Length: 248
Image (cartoon, rainbow, N blue to C red; front, top):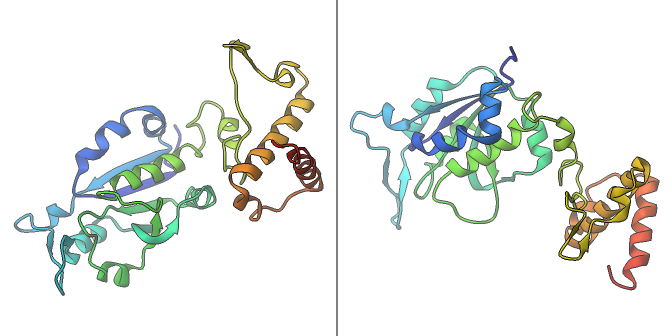
């Protein structure tokens, strides 16, 4: 039996939000294999009348989650080895490098804000790691929590049928992945690149690396500046740039 690798405690006003996503796909497999454990705590359970929000000091539209029920929920689930995460637009952008760091954490508490957000004193008192899943507005942190849990779960042992599948994903190695194909070899006159049908694994690996660099250079050149590249990669980029003079 596989021991639990990462234990997630979610603090959310809507525990039912997670029932569907946790019962299918990668998350279901991760739970069944014991790679992750997920427990959900509702801050309403730590109030006398169920009230978890109130008006903003200073006026303004929208309600704010009160600090008391959130703090009580945190204290209920907190351990000595806990990492507390608060989803907020002021946080670090969630990326694959951060996900790779999070798989080393045995216990992660995920705060799911709602309405205008959580009283700032929670951040001051508990100093959570603040994370953003993108520059857009969501109704709450629940969908962000699911994004993070799935991103972490799929990198854990025995979750994916073949861990190499995760290793070849876009962004896993800092680059966008090369284009992928399956049968049929010809579809509406469009043919799979001949090199992928050649059986020559060395040539296939070279083609995939070149196409990965080419796609990243064209669509996400910002990623290249964050990488330490080999001489072979630099040579491939020069080759791609040379081809680009005639358009690529």
